Length: 363
Image 1: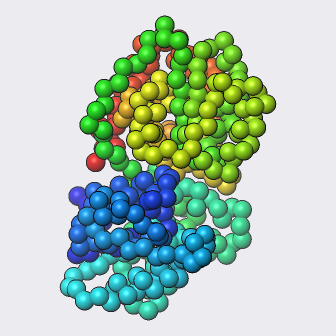
Image 2 (image 1 turned 180 degrees about the vertical axis):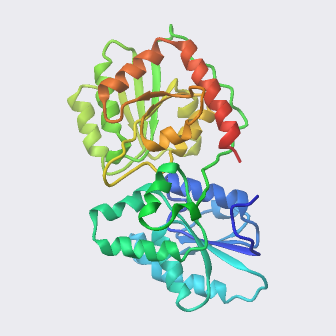
Image 3 (image 1 turned 45 degrees about the vertical axis):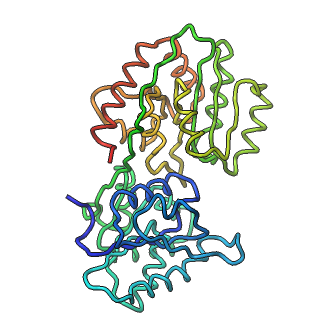
């Protein structure tokens, strides 16, 4: 049964879409590739690339920014205008508009002032928490937008609880991310007698991802022969680089940015352990953690913090990951040492996680 309202045409209005990279971009891109048809449409910031036509069946309309580096949120007005023009196009049947997040819902709401619109909205943890650090006006605006949506979609139970500030969460619909399992999924775990344990973490370099905790944990494992790769980019890059130098970890920790999908796939396949070190803070929370699904699909043994997103994903009787206390480097170092010394446990976690992936998180 489809989670979407019955319609003849779907239009996604979003500020987050490839070629820009991130968890939300990946989430929405996968939804479009697997549920949108040639009759549907995506309106997103530009410029586009060749992938628009090779990856998607539907049409992708790009709203360019002038100048080039104008903030995406300033594109909401031209996106609303473009949506209005698309809704005026002749064609029978019902059209449903989907806002990629609450900010994008502003563009849909502006369009609704001029023409009737049936619309839905995707929501995530951090954007629902942002009102804690801003004025009550933002909370009132978010509530106004969400209450006018036909459906509100959320990813995890933790996000569902945050929605209580704005509306009755029982009216919302969970739509978890899903991935495609790579055609080649055979991965042989390295035996303990291999020289170097390969550790990988993937995510944007921002405080709530907890990469600083991971670097501190590596510093505590001076008696473990390992190498840690952190793949991602963001405002914390310089700070992390300085931390690595200060702790004399240049030979043990590598920051790897601007890697494409093929390079990232290689990093997953060549890694023994995958670390998910996210922290739930007062103003930011992991929306889901698609990278966990990617690691599960490539048979990496997973070590994760006890953040809400990870606990939701691994809510099953069989152990699928080794947990540690978020923001606690000692706890993370202990978890790494435990799996480094216990290949049978790593194998058990990998098998259980792959079974869970196929049951819940595959298109």
